[in-house]
Amino acid sequence: MLNGTRRFGALAIAAALFASACSSAGASPTPAPAATPAPATPTPAAMDTSSAAPGTPAATPAPTVNCVTGSITTSGSTALQPLVDAAAKQYAKACAGATITVNGGGSGTGLSQVAQGAVQIGDSDVTAESKLATPDASKLVDHVVARQGWIVVTNKDVTVTNLTTQQNIDIWTGKVKNWKDVGGPDMPIVLIFRPASSGTRATFKKLVLGGATEATGGQNVTQDSNGAVTTAITKTDGSVSVIGFAYYDDPANKPLLNGLQLDGVDATVANMAGGTYKLAADGHMYTNGQPSGLTAAFLAYMMGPEVQGTLIPSLSYAPVVK
Image (cartoon, rainbow, N blue to C red; front, side):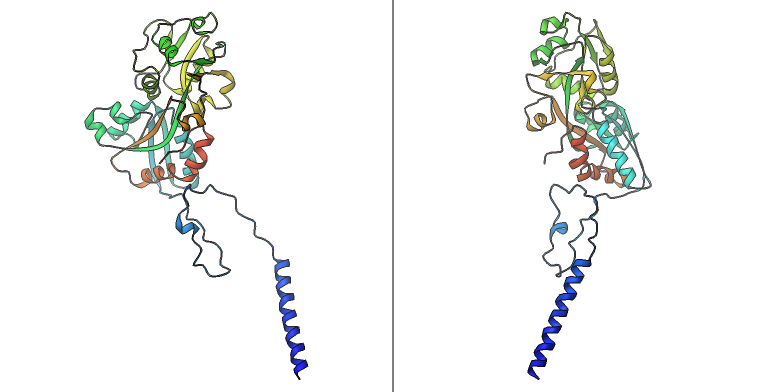
């Protein structure tokens, strides 16, 4: 009887082992979903599985897009526009019923329009305090969404590869009028300005020109956006101007432009983020008071991993440093 019990137990164990092996061998692995960028700091809820019962799947991270329906408009900085426009398209694609219109016009325009209530968000390369009177500026709420850089560019016929800060001052104040005086060809310098409302112009004047008064008269042109400047540079012999990294690094633009170093430092996102390249500033998205509804949801999306971790580096911006 004892032998029979032992044989029965052995058979039961063997059967169990065989069933387990068959189950493992015959299981079809579930295809992993496409990877999505994770937040820089994972939330505890997404990572903590210590209390899960054995065999239960790991907790799924909470959705990063808070979908809110409605319609909003942003306007302002054309340097920031490629990022805001791309993020708006991504948000609208993920969230049916949400419409986000992105307009340019320059930082000053964006700040004025949001202060007047004409738009929900004003995009700017500079602070509201630097463009608006105190009563208007004080009611706006600043949302810093990115770090952005600009590069001095010339027409391809200009063979200069670097300009110092002082050389830039001499060129933009009209002291130097020919490229031969800074190591380039014997060719008149054509300045392509942005309008007074431009955040790009204000940033360049502050960080590179040291507030010096720019040249008036002579060979100069004014264009109202980074995109228009880019086109004008490619078509104007001897021209020079300043555009955002996003425009310069665009594969359709870069081969047509001559990008310059500033004080011997390459105009790159890495140098901007590291602080060695000085022509850089925060990208602001202002609201008239604390945001709500779709405006608040979109601004939260701008600070989420889909934008900060993926979209920003792909468009030659740098993420917000906290």
